[in-house]
Image (cartoon, rainbow, N blue to C red):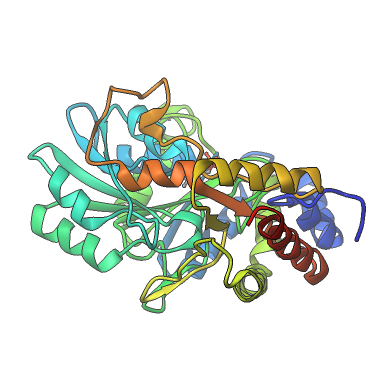
Length: 374
Ligand SMILES: Cc1ncc(COP(=O)(O)O)c(C=O)c1O
């Protein structure tokens, strides 16, 4: 075992494993001619949209902008409500605010940890316009139930796929169910850039065209704005890197699933709740999140691992509704599961380059914690 710490995610290891291919792709962009949008971006847009199984991809600067611009493209703004979860990256909720709309927060299902459709139903009002389903940790939300709710109440489904590249619901890739779906390529994601990047995908050519305007000042042609827009262009260096990594995504997903399978075998019998792969779901294990019996045990295990060079993460330590910027400001349903998870979850190291030896060492160290603290 090396002396280096074992991290929750290790994008540097991802780069080193593909260094030659990535360096070559970077050089091809450096050679020009242009450094804004261009061929590298359009190639990645069409390859990634094809991978998801939809017609259009619009590359943007990051996953937060992808959600923000998706809502703008749908004309969702001031006075409109968007239902999503509190148990997510702050970005999901922040993006709703960026569009000028009002986020409304629903609890998550205790088993799958994704948005609970029954909780969503109770929060729908005449002002509700959309549901953002976050496929958290790599696990698809219950898309059948959410699509049914949308149909019954005239709502739009937006999928936040930031943590779920390649995850499947009933065999189809997530991102192909919502009217629009958004991705982040933040470096630690299952498909990660070496910096910021994001994308909105859709089958709707009108929405795709609108998104292309919104990401660049509303320009119909250079220096000519037909609607108000922003600057959220995908960087061609990142697009070139992502094109290389996209070729390895299926192999990386298989590796993530194998690592998750080994954790499951090795951690069996301990007082831990292990991740459950929901019915109809193909989980891509962006994170391997276990639940401990209480807050004290979670923190003690995390410290025990850190002392032994194993860095476990917490996703997320606070529900969005518990954070100072949002506390007491947002309408929400019961937050019982969200608040319990915030106190008890722990993300064990999992990334494609994690070796079997390292993974075994993490399991053994977790096991030894429970031997010492029965
Ligand atoms: C669920 C979720 N949504 C949105 C985002 C925002 O992505 P980005 O960091 O690329 O803005 C992230 C990543 O941080 C995320 O995990």
